[in-house]
Length: 499
Ligand code: HEC
Image (cartoon, rainbow, N blue to C red; front, side, top):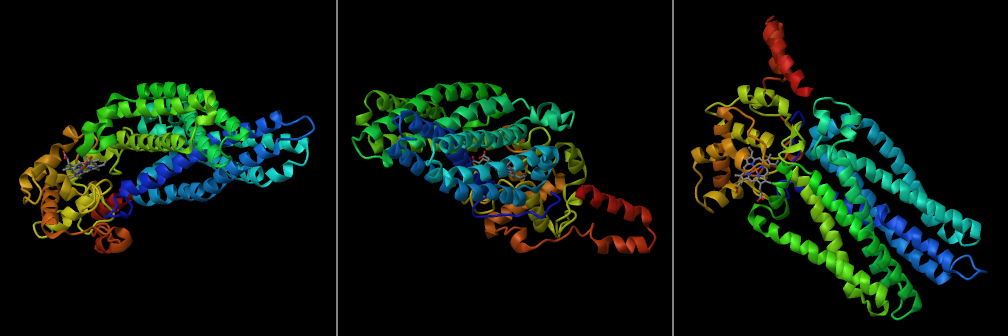
């Protein structure tokens, strides 16, 4: 909380990260990690199937090259942009958690950066030298080798990041011994990697399947061959992906699987969660049927038959990401930091003294009768605004109106009572961290929000105000009047909250 709070009230802060991150994962898994080995294998087959006196089958090679062009253009534009977008969005929305993650995973991220730069260089080499490499068999084989290198490096970037994602869900031993190794080998790391690897291959295969139909003519020999190759790839990776999913699911702690229904459908549609497993079975079966058709009756496959499974594969990957992001709540880093960016170990202090006292950026250092609404607003920004908006997506007014009746004036006492116990019934929310006065101020503010429709514009528009008790102007007179004990204690507080 020692950063000014960026806030997007119409969209919801978490949603901003989710949109960018989910798009990024779809591109990373479907068009890089899984797609590069898929393409390299096809390229290799061009060489294997070519006539003895030729380097590769030119028609086949052109098709594979065009498929790679799609992957190349999307990964180097949208893929790279969303990668940077994740950094920017988490830095503004969730600065304390990303700062902690950087401290823990500093060397992992440093290595990741080196690997990533290598990956970018290799992808440039791989794509841009494709045409030239067709001039001699030696060059072509070297080019294919580059493809396998690139595949390996793309996988390694994922393998490093997955450690951090697993850590956020369950840091394991790290919570008692803060070392990089403990953080890296968290209990969810391997299961998630074992699930993601074949899943990336599968999604890429389905995407490649669509491209192979787009880039070949109906009833041509090359289409039949391409369809068969994609189908084999899909049939190979699907069971591994399913097995990985089961392994991963079993590694997830119960408290998280309990959040699953809200994660998939939000509270409003949570009951549809039970349908999800049938949808998954239907989707996997469709993918399987289309792949089997591609092997036994490749001439019968049409674009629309593959397009639907392809869309489903990407949608499921997106749902999986959303669920992963959601179920670790109320934590952003399991057992260490709540999703409201407050550390678990600081909670007792906040509950005793109030959260405003320790906040660096608040216009009110404590709640008084005259500043109740303003203080409540500050409390809302500090404790609810990472997940709730005032009037936009997952708005706090709507959250309460859904319980108490749309348009019905809120009763401050019941609002406060709900907030006090909200972490029990709704386990995805952290416990309210403030003291009693702050709880009452928050309830007044929420009632006021319902009446006035006030909107929080975020530090990016409203600017920042430093806690009046921690500002230089508050501390200087104390030092001058030699009240050094008091001044020191105030300075300590601000040092503490800046830590
Ligand atoms: C970690 C994120 C997070 C934080 C922090 C958070 N909430 Fe929530 N809250 C949620 C989510 C997610 C929902 C469910 C939204 C849905 O699925 O419709 C929710 C739902 C609610 C509901 C509706 C409950 C119901 O049963 O319908 C209320 C009321 C609420 N929150 C109040 C608050 C208040 C007040 C705060 C701050 C003190 C707060 N929340 C902090 C994530 C959070």
